[in-house]
Image (cartoon, rainbow, N blue to C red; front, side):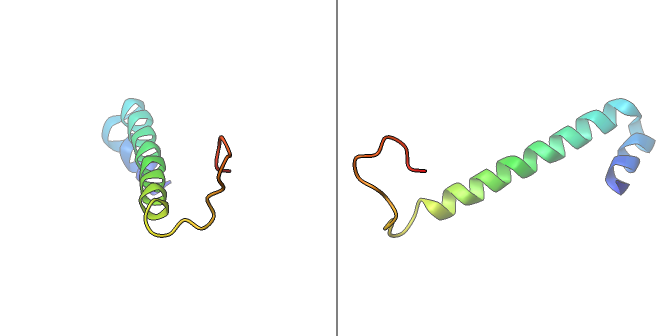
Length: 55
């Protein structure tokens, strides 16, 4: 909320819309990148042969 209020006070609704959307997108992409990096290395004993998608 404080960050959103700051965006609104500085630039109005356009800054609020873009600022919040960019922050959410950056966090989602960062979360995916960390999960991808940490789960692709090392032994993968959970991998199942003959399955189309690893669940």
